Image (tube, rainbow, N blue to C red; front, side, top):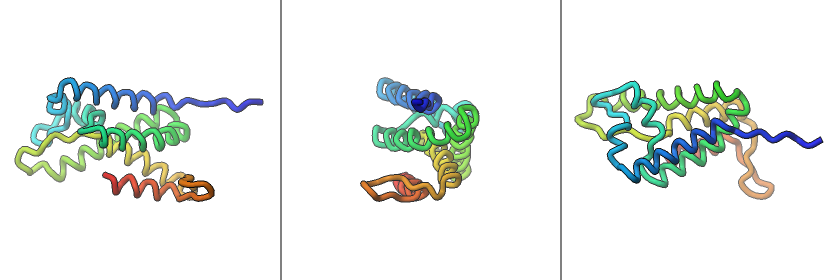
Length: 155
């Protein structure tokens, strides 16, 4: 009997949303100022819209590679709705941490990026699957937590 393949639909939707936002920023760069989180004038809406915007291709691809990797694992482990909640709350927590650090700064730039959301997903994976080895070369693997550390260093 063939194994049924599952598709991480929400992970794919979030990935497409980030890619669509990237094209919006390319076409209209002021999108960052309209939908990025501004600590000087915080908005509930931009807490969430900011996690779909990225500064450049490296920032976008870095987050998307780790989102697709960790997001799929989390989506399969806890289900689509809980994964979506983890993603949004992780992103919001990252925005709030940023706000707490720069709120008293004069005119800080808008915050954009899915790093807080991706960090929540990788944190979940690192704790739940701490002993799982991720293959990095034939016959060689490292703990998933090591991949999380690599992601954090890249941030």
